[in-house]
Length: 126
Image (cartoon, rainbow, N blue to C red; front, side):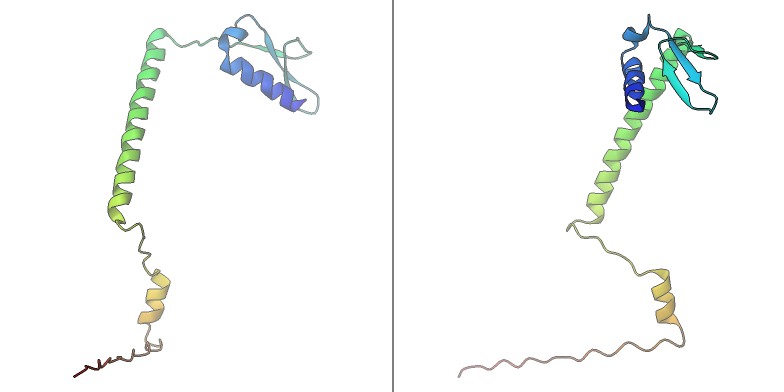
């Protein structure tokens, strides 16, 4: 039942021309459960789907949405370019955490073991 109501509400929102001549009521039962119906119900309120903004307000909102979409596209391109520049080989460097650094720098920290140098002697044929 809820799925059907959600689908009906979605249809009305996506197709305003279908909803222009339809009445929709918001109904609430005694337990507080809200449903939407195309039939009047006790205590129900008729909903309107009219856009009450002026033409200037609708145009201003559309202009803002267009500017924000362009800004979002530009920021996405910049982020992608920055990510590509930061890791040319495709690998990312992960810095040591502050906790690891503090533990290493601690006066009670054990010194790191010294690495042994390996010397390779090549034999020559002579």
